[in-house]
Amino acid sequence: MANCFIEDLAARLSHRIQISTDALKVYQGAIERAFGANVDYGSIIKTYGHTELAEQRRYSPPEVIKAERVPVQGNPDIDLISTSHVEKQNHTLRMHCRRLSRLTNAFSKKLENFKAAVALHYAYYNFVKVHQTIRCTPAMEAGVANSAWTVQDLVTMTDA
Image 1 (spheres, one colour):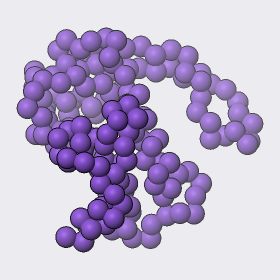
Image 2: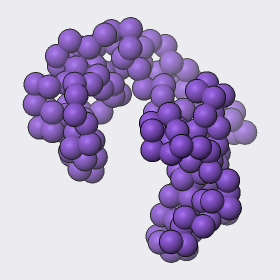
Image 3: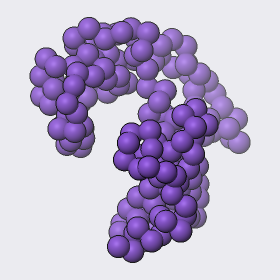
Image 4: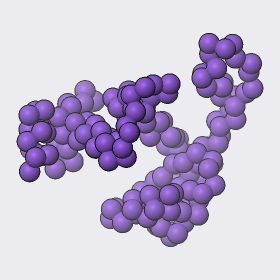
């Protein structure tokens, strides 16, 4: 899956970028195959502590003791090696699409329904929701849309 994802990413880009990943080894080979030497790549390696958690806190993440930023390929800016953006995006998806929350009964019985729910989230997030940091929608910022859509626009576009 890492190879498919990174190859798709590389095919969509026309300029050199910096990529950051966690320490999962499959990314290194996938990035090298897809980008060759045309990438600045760094990895963040987190060391976690071991704590005994009470039963009611068993789903809490362990404490991060150390986070080391390591250049892997090219010339990445060490200060920009971070997985925070993708972790925040994953958190936002889990909060907006409750099918992805832990310990929930809001699940999809069919894969087709699950894919539709995730697609609806991303369409809303990118075309309808005005983001405070950029004061417009991501689609407007990218030049894909001239104005923010309404939910009615979103529903109408999916019927087309």
